Each structure stands twice: as C-alpha cells, then as structure tokens.
Length: 198
Image (cartoon, rainbow, N blue to C red; front, side):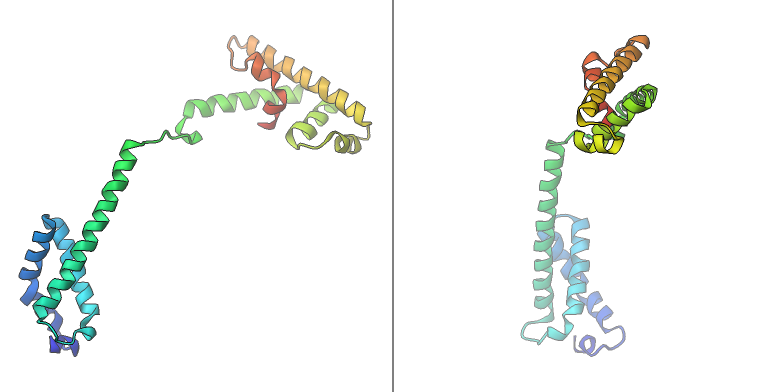
C-alpha cells in the first residue's frame, strides 16, 4: 500500500491482484449477480486509486477496500432500483406516439388536403385571394388589410366573405368530384382554418 501511495511502478496492480478475490467475493454476496459484482469491483478499485492519498492506515487495507466496495455496491443497487422503477413506468404507461412521422397515412392525408386547399386558393381571383391570405394566413386585422389593398374596411370584409364562400364551395366540389369525403362540408366550412394550413 505504501508503494502504491508513492506511485511505485506496478504497486497498485499488485495491490489489486492481492485483494481482488476477497473484494469480488464481497461484491457478489452484496449484489447476488456476477455482472453487477464485476461493475462494482471495477468502480471500487477506481475509487480506491483516487483515494490512495487519503488512506492513513487507521484500518487494515482490506477493511478500507471492503468499506469502499460496500459503498459502491449500495450506490449500484440504488441506481438499479431507480432504473427498474423507470422501466416499470415506461412499460405500464406506454404513451401513443403522436408525432406526425409516426402516422404516415395521416401525413399523406394532410398533404393531400393542403394541396387541395392550395389549388382552391390559387383558383380564386387575385383580389379575393389577397384578402383571404392577408386575413387567414397572416392574421392581419380588417383595417390593416384595407390599408394594404387601398380599399375601405367594409370592402375588405365583403371581399373576405366572398373569398371564404368561394373557397368553401370549391373545396366541397373538389371533395364531391373526387368521389370521396376527403374534405367534408364541415371541413370546407372552415375555410379560414384550412387556408392557414397552406
């Protein structure tokens, strides 16, 4: 031990060889598992090496190493218990994966709906398209839209109403024309929300 404290070549290796059997045996009794015991023994010797300078010789080297091993085993057991509790929670409460990438069909449907909304938006006359884009996509108030387009606020409201109505009718007719209910009347009725998806 004194040679190891003085950094003599191979002294700590000799100390490990001399005490390994007893240290491993203690770790195995404390943990009941060879793999865990190996981990604890390795950790115990690392701590012992780092604490060489603090060893004063008040206790035998074996006693000192046993104390370190027992502390490492206790820490290891606590870590394992936390892990097991965590794993039990994960198993018991497996939450559904709500990420879009986990639902390819939903992603495809959403992409088709976005494409239909974009096509319907493109089919609107420019003056109506501008109003609906400024209001429903950029969320500008009616006064700001009127200023932007150089029209009265009343005219902006009327154009927005007409744009939404045309967009709703176009989306509904596209859904009916495709033979499916990809865009239902209710969805078409929410043209302002659909336009935000573009």
